[in-house]
View 1 (cartoon, rainbow, N blue to C red):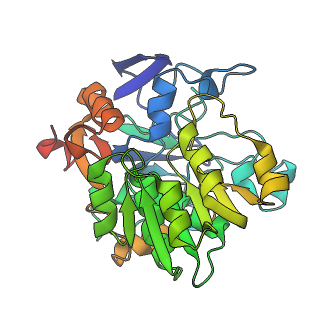
View 2: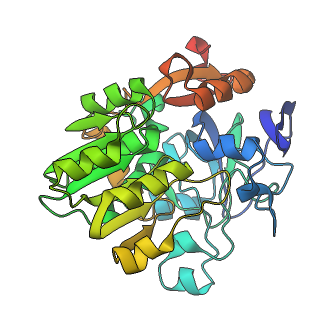
Length: 363
């Protein structure tokens, strides 16, 4: 089969590799479309987050890709019965394969599994979806996807599940003043989910004017470009000098973290979702002695996939405006450039393998 194979930072190659063969407990799927995540770009560029030290997270060679939609080709009957699908159905598997044995898995906190096996990062164990076919290994968490959801939109299920989890972590109350920094695919999903929580005001931040405009169309009460407007001063003025109640960091840039710590009120709730290329340094005195903030991390999309699927199916979340560009799998390098640099106002960029409906009209 045709696949993109990661051999190291900036060493990704289009190769012919053996098509996987399912064993007991496994499922073979045909990839219909796969997304490019910001974490994929940072991994490609060699971020220490993925390549160490002290220990490399990526094990090469590996096929990247943890955002995808697929169709079942072959499956262990017991697995199909357990998750309620049959051969020919559209499915998605959650991005992590939990061990079910560590202290976190045994407490139901499977998304923090000690082994952290996430599709597309550990070669030979959990190869990802930048390929024609993919294997759901034993222990995968699988969800059936309604046929009525177009493949182009279904790729957004994984990012949306992550966005739902982040917004839930923020514990938004009715009447809260909420700021979300970073209007990439995740931020735009968070924005729409946060709107459902009933904040008094929902403000979006991004340094790209095209993203600012899109945020306004997708439900932001106000959207600012911090490169052009002093966002901290603006939010402080809008809130009588106090600051926002909730700040969700989805930009993955150090300046966004510092901005949020200056912008948020005392006793505010700060959610960190972004993945950073390099370590970030802040004044922890502001967090403790200065404001006594509640800091939440947010990782993956546990227990959120069914809701993400339903939100897309019922158009509670506008997926069409977020998925902007489709490239053929063989043009993955161009696709990554569009994703990284937001060329032609790209937001979510996806790859279509040969033989799929999307491939025929892809670039």
